[in-house]
Amino acid sequence: MIAMPQNKNYKSLLEKTTLYAKMGSWELDLKSHELYWNRVTKLIHGVSENFECNINEALKFYKDAYSKNLMINSLKNAIEKNEEFDIKIKLTTALNEEIWVRSVGIPVIEDGVCTSVYGLFQDIDIEEKKKEKLHKQIQFISHVLENTSIGIASFDEFGHIEKVNSGLCEILGYRKYEMKKLTYKDVIFKEDINKFLIGLNKLKNNKIQSYTSKKRYRHKNGNILYVHLVLTVIRNINKEPINYLAQIIDLTPQYKNEEKLNSYLDITTDQNQRLLNFANIVSHNLKSHSGNLEMLLELLHEEQPQLLDNELMYLLGKSVENLSETIQHLNEVVLMHKANDKNIETLNLSHFIDKTIENVSASIKAENIQVDIQVNNELTVKAIPAYLESILLNLITNAIKYKDENKKALLKIVANKITNYIEINFVDNGLGIDIEKNKSKLFGMYNTFHSNENARGIGLFITKNQVEAIGGTIDLESKVGVGSTFKVKLLNGK
Amino acid sequence: MENKTNHICIIDDDPLFRFSSKKMIEIGSCSNTCFLIFENGLEAYSYFVEALKTNSKLPNLILLDINMPVMDGWEFLEKITLLENSKNLKITVVSSSSGSDDILKAKNYAIVNDYITKPFNMAKIKRILSKLKN
Image (cartoon, rainbow over all chains, first blue to last red; front, side, top):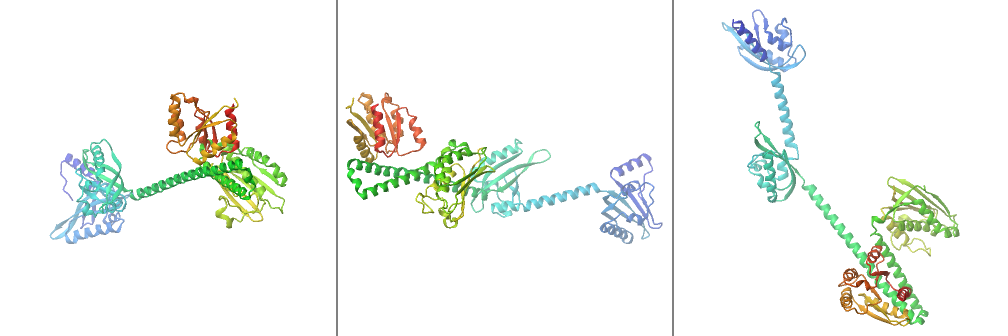
């Protein structure tokens, strides 16, 4: 046992010190097999001051095998080999708390024989747990650092690179040892360095907490990289900058994709423009020429009316008339695609349908067609009035024209709200179209599917163009001998 | 007033159109007609600059095409309205464009009093000429 000074004040001071240091003492008398714990040692074990202990009881405080064995072996070596020990072990207190302790043991030898072992017993739990935590944090950070695809580097104010992770090596194409010979001047694109230095200076002078910027870097192979850079400063306790931390995300693939996308967009815009110009020129020039033909023919008739009797003249006149009509249609389509939003109004659908039915009431009556309209009179659509009239007229007359002579003809018009659209279905029980066969031609110009004398093949083409010009879609379901359903979706007026 | 002479100006780059519209007017008109013909806006503009300055007799009707080389119809209208006394000119725009944008644009000029789409036919010619009489 440690010899205690006799002075009482001195003794209490020592006791206080050992208490603050959480350091107790112990002694194992090998003759009497008595184990002595002082107050602090008992406190560390979580037992009361009058706790009577022996060696077997004491060893029960070590629950894990490692700690228990280490304690037993250390004691054994002290007794048998006279070896001192200083070990760190885990102890479970009487209050069932697991804590780290330090145990120091010194054997006392009399005539070559160990008579007792005494030592210190210290609660080092707080320090150990801190170390453990730190270790975990370091591991966590180093795992992140080494496995992330974000490039991370620290460098001093002269730009010398101190630490880099694999992510940065991957991005820039260098090996770690090569990177350490570089400065930022070697990797940042020349034109971007000034901006970078301004940012660095602001950081250094504490004007900003972090500097974020898009920069161009150079890959080892000379290629340009587009990166997103975040720069922060690491300061010592006196807030002086010691080094800088750069985090770099490689945006080159995204950048390249965007570039590609933009170039496609440019090409498409350009082609659309050229197509529109082409359509304008063609329609305008064709119209001039066919107009001239018409005028010359009319003059010929005025001046030489006897030519009218010539069949060739008659056919020439017919051809010119057809040519003009075609060009007229072409012009309408070109104009349609120039339709702008300002002409689009909110229109009452049922009102427009009623008006169209009224306009064709004569042929409905003559062809004996049963019309069934199921359209809520509250529904509105966004459309240009002339287009809506034309679309409705085309689809209704279509059903009349292509009715099946062997059946009582029916036409049902149904409208429903579908999200932002109003879907109008024109259901007939007419001749129908073989959709599979005619897929590519359905809404094309001058395609007719029946030998009807009124079929000009322009109606559906114009209708489709008009529907699309006002932001809608048109589809057809049809079966030969059963009938057709035209589905028109127009933007809801509300 | 039956035998008064009509002065009609045609500004168009298309020789076929110039020929046939002139001919149609000759057929459709019951009075004598004098023609003043230009192949583009610039030729016509140069003529009218002088004519307005010297107070020469102006045509009763100017038929103006829009799509022309050198100076097109729009530029002609733009420039001619800047001239003094230009409001004495009576212009009818004759174009193959039937777009409402072009029609509205033309009618924004005070000196444009009509817009006719090509091609001409006798019915259109007669309508223009009957307006002249009034």
